[in-house]
Image (cartoon, rainbow, N blue to C red; front, side, top):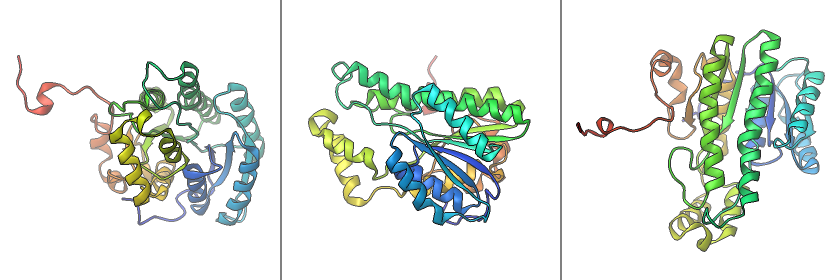
Length: 296
């Protein structure tokens, strides 16, 4: 899905993309620039961030488009405060935010892995995303104009993922936070969605393989090896979807978890009423009748 891109979806837009010094985040920044946006990128590694900004300069579509960067740890509220202050001083306005920054966290039995490491992944992946959403919503409301937020979900958000407690818990929280804040901001013309990017061959996969079969389990380890050998899902798919959700083309779609690989999001424009009038693409409890049982 998403291979036939419409160009210039983000012409003139100003965007923030977190965790954009490598992998999916950098691919999203590239896509946004090619679609006509100016981008502010951040990460914890200033050297890698500086190199990414240089690399992205060649992707600028608009003559007045800009690539700016600032070091920030999204798990530290003061860093995010400074990041938003900086980008507004440079851009003067903000149209869309992609909360991509995240870490893998500990891998292994949930009762035995480091508690501090579980806290760290929750702080960065979930609380960092939530605080960034709060900042973005405050900016959009102050501007009195439409805004869009795209959050990155991941493995374990829609079903149990044993031996990945911290990561799965954080990403499940991101999806529910997306749904809640989307409800709270629908009156403001602020649209918030989450993306399931698919199994990509990024640094996180390398971390998973490094953890080994004993920590993650034989089945998950074999699956990770197979993914590594096959090349995994292209990050371009999630980047295309992020650009779509950050653009006016996505209409009033909000509060949804959308798969870059499996969901036919390019046709959402013709199904907006059905999607927003139902629980399609949301987290929900499955009851017996959903599976054909008629229990009393």
